[in-house]
Structures are given as C-alpha cells and as structure tokens.
Image (cartoon, rainbow, N blue to C red; front, top):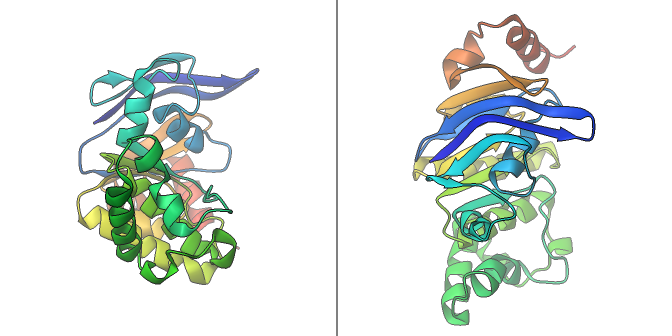
Length: 243
C-alpha cells in the first residue's frame, strides 16, 4: 500500500533521511523506533505530504506522493495522521473536531457526518464527551478524539506520530487500547513509538532507524527480543533497562 524508495530529505544543511527504502502492506502494522532526531517523524510527514522530500519516491497505492500536486488531497483523505500533540481545535467540541474533515474536505452531509462522528466517539469510549471542548478533556481523551477524527475520513491507513509521548503514564493505556482494537480490525498502521510492549505485541514488523537510515528491520518479536545489529542492541538495552 505504501512504498518508499531511496527517500532523502534535508533541512538546510542537515540531511535527516539518507535513503529510506521500505514498504507497508495492506492490513499491516509497522512500528518505527529509534532515538530522538533519527528521522522517524519526518518519514510520516513525507508519506502524508506534510513535508516535501528531496530525492527518491513515495507512493500510496501506486499514486506518487507530491505535496504540490492536486492528487495530494486524495492521498491525505486515504492516509490519516494522528499527531503527538493532538492538534484539536480548542474552540470546537469533540464532535465538531471529528466531523471537520468529512464536512469540509469530503463534502458529506451534516446528518451523515454527525451520525458517524457520534459512532466513532462511542468506538473510542467517549460517547458522553461529544459536547465537551478539548480543554475540558484529559490528554488521553483528547488523543482518542484525535483518533476518532482520523477514522472519520474513512482512511485506508493511519500514521501515528508518537501518539502517547505527550500523555501522563496512567493515560497511555486507554490510547493504546484503541490502537490495539484498530489493529485487530485490520487497519493499516505506521506507528512511530517508544512503547516497546505495544510494538512487540501488536506490530507485524519493526523498523529501527538511526541517523536517517534503517539500521535493522524485521518481524516485531524477533527484532525486539533478539536484535542482530549492535546499534539496535544498544538502543533497546537503554530503552528497556534504563539506569
């Protein structure tokens, strides 16, 4: 479904992605792990056309990702993104945040958009919060609203950019629970995460990225339990067994 071929990206003189080649199959869950600044989030932003890339090619179901092409609107309706910091409109209710895309991008009727929006809030366990504004919600609740908003576009894939890193530890489980259910339902997902337990239990594959390159990739349990590359071994040792 998603193909990256020799993708390079620089910010000024700093080369952030140094030739990323990877693919994601329909229904697959791929977790991207690695140290801060390694290029993980940039990969997601390039897939969704939020960032341009300098060389190489990215395609979604055979359609080239080019943020300056009219086709980018179609790609963004097929590939939703959930951000680290929620990115909800604070002056709109949870339900209004969820229906924004279907109403103004997909031009759905208000009745259809609001009916499905309520159903999606119920799906993420927030049916009773439809009329609440984001400042009235916990971080975990806001992130679940953001997931409902992503689902409202009826995407073929969802990109998650460290969706739990801004949450208090006790709120992480609710968000991961929603993501586990999406994986069980067959949603194609690319997840940048530091939650190694989630990656081990839910992901089909894991990519370890460091310094803008894929150092190691493989089946999730195999890579996380028995990493082959010394850099992967060192990273996981520090993450799983911090001093």
